[in-house]
Every structure is written in structure tokens, then in C-alpha cells.
Length: 438
Ligand code: GDP
Ligand code: IMO
Ligand code: MG
Image (cartoon, rainbow, N blue to C red; front, top):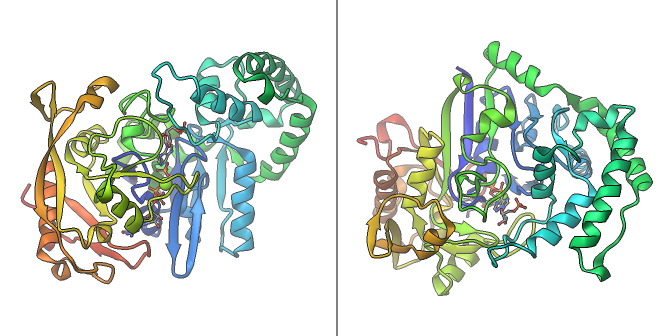
């Protein structure tokens, strides 16, 4: 069975891009199957830093076919921008790419709706979206009446589809947006703009469901690249402070069209601490000196929006939940180097809610807000880890920290990352598996 998946187990930005890039060389195909340009994946190749929002991180490895499957929402301008950037940086084979004709397309009205809706949540706290039109595009997909799929751009009916949508969206937006911000959308200008995008992207558009099914049946090795993190999953995350797709492991098949029987390995990506961008509950948040120190040391600022990321201690209750939810076989612990220099480290091992101790992750946002984390304190280490390349070279305290994560989450560690570069990675092989006794 040829399929491997990489899933973020927190609120995104766990350094999935680095692991996808490393694993790509052992695969024939890399697939993005949910989300859109709300993702921001950084891949460091020697002196070069690549930031990708829409294209799979696999594009940086020649000889691999990259697929954007039907579950992704595509901003065509962003796809073109990223292709142009890779071309200008002379990335070999950068456009060995297929875009699903089933993928839904983001239009200018989605950006306007994203801004307007995020100011008007019934919860009172804003979601703090990336403003990339993701939620409104997925809402139109499910609502059907105003949806446009990539394949529609090549049909005679496209112009009328846009005219129909623009008439309705102008009415909606006029009611949603403060009058001084309302700018009527011009259907003919949008048709012209999107027709040009469609021509540019024509060589890449395909029925990727059929392509991937055939590839899986032929035994091709497929790597599924999750975006966001499982706690942002629309059905199983910290709802409503989530993204609009299934970003946990449950989304792989519905987004790609590839059934679970072809997926034999799920790798969970875990930051050695926790971060979150935007609104919503975050039980182990450290809105204090510790959080600031982690932010400074980990350069925790959003790849897409540049917003400072909220930082806090590792939450083993949450990671245990998301690793079970995603059917994770092994985890990669990322950014361990960022914790060097702290006297002591805390891991949240259980929650207290209304005076009761629990290991379950609550389903309602108000209960997550009530969580009082129960921490275990471990000694820190002072050594710089960025040059460490084997488990034996790690300070004892760092090794103990990894062992404890394994025990609490119940999943063995497969890789440890101590810096952004491909080389700053500690493989954990079978004779030194952290958590092998689990
Ligand atoms: P993704 O969205 O999950 O792909 O993660 P991002 O790219 O948004 O954020 C991870 C950031 O951490 C990027 O800037 C990476 O270059 C960087 N990074 C990856 N691994 C490590 C690591 O082990 N240590 C440090 N210090 N930085 C890392
Ligand atoms: P990667 O793939 C971190 C967050 C936003 C907001 C919420 C909803 O880089 O891990 P959206 O624009 O999706 O409607 O915003 O989800 N969010 C992310 N946070 N990493 C991401 O992607 C994210 N994608 C969305 O900050 O709180
Ligand atoms: Mg990111």
C-alpha cells in the first residue's frame, strides 16, 4: 500500500512543509487535498528559503508530480504567482503539476465576505481568519448555488455563471459591509480576469481523482500533504475557531478521492511547544515572558499574515486527541532547538474542568475555555541543539522531554527537528526509537 500522510497535530505551523520536503524524495506524487492559500509552508534548502501557500511543498523536488486535489479551494492568481516565483528562481521541474477540475475557485467576493463575516461572529470573539476567502468559498461549495469549480472556467456557461453570482453577491455584500467599504463587483472585469487565469492554468487542469485512483492502483507512492492542523478541523477542532475544511487525518480521502485502503502510514507533526494564530481558546497559552521568549526564539510570526503567533507549553491532552483522530502511526517532534535555555519546561498532562480532572478534549468551545491545565514540570537544557544530528548527542533533559511526550501521547517518535534546514534533522531508527517500549 503506497500512501503516506503528513498531518499537523496542533493549530497549524508545526513545520509540516519541512517534513513533506524531506519525505518527497521517496514518493512519486505529492498531493494537497484541503485548505487553500491560508496555509504557509516554509521549506529551507541550503541558502534558499521557499514559502508556499497553495502549491504542495513537493514542488521543490524534481521528478515528482504535484497534485492539488478537488478538496482544495484554489485562488488562481496565487497559483500563477507561486509558479512564476519558482520559475524565476529556476526550480527544476517546478511545474510538474496537476490541478483538479473539481476544485472550487476563490473569487473577489470571497475576500470581501471573509472580511465582513469575521467581524460578525455570534460568539463575540473573532476567528481571525487569514482573509484568503477560504471560509466563504467552502460555504459556497456546500451551498452549491453560487459555486464555481475550476473546470467551469473552460465552459461556455462560465460568463453567465459569474454574472449570476455577481448580481447576488453585490446584494449580499451591500447588506453585510459598512457603506463606506462597499465597492460593487464588476462582473465583466472578473470574467476577463479569470478567463486570463484560466488560459494560463489550462495545461495543468485535469481529473485528478481519476489520476490518483489509477496511480494508487498501480502502486505509485503517494504523499498526502495536510495543511493547517487537526485542532483547526471544521468538524473535530476547536469549533468555531477552526478553518473550513477537514484538516485532521479524516479529510484525506474526501479531499483527494483516494480511499483509506491505499493509505498505510500517517505521520503526525508536533511542535515541541504550542502555537496558535487568530482567535479561539488555547489552554496552555503563555501570554507572558515565557510566551514572548518562545516567539522570539522560534521566530513565531505567521508565514501568510505575518501576525505574531500565540505561544505556550506543549499540550499532551490535545496532541493525544488529534493523533488518535488522525490515526497517527508515528510523530515528528519539531523545533526542539527553540526550547534551549529555559530553566524548566512544562507539559500539560491533563485538564481540570469545573473541578474535574479529564484526559478528554472537550467538544464545546466554552468548555475548552474553562480548562485549567494540569502541568508536569521537567528540567530544561542550556545547550544549543542546532548542530545535533543523533539522539546520543542530545542533552539528557532533551531526551527525557522527548520520552515523556511519547509516553503521554502514546505514539513513537520517528524524527526530531532541530532547525529549519533539511540537514537539521535527527532520524530515529529502530534501535533507538524513542518510545519503542510503548
Ligand atoms: P507549516 O505550516 O506546518 O509548514 O509550518 P511553517 O512553515 O508555517 O512554520 C514552521 C517554521 O519553522 C518555518 O519557518 C520553518 O522554516 C521553521 N522550522 C522548521 N523546522 C524547524 C526546527 O526544527 N527548528 C527551528 N528553529 N525552525 C524550524
Ligand atoms: P498552515 O498550513 C496556522 C487559522 C487562522 C484562523 C483560522 C481560520 O501554515 O499550518 P481561515 O483563513 O482558514 O478561515 O482561518 O485558521 N489558520 C492557520 N493557522 N497555520 C495555518 O496553515 C492556518 N490556516 C488557517 O489563523 O485562526
Ligand atoms: Mg504555516
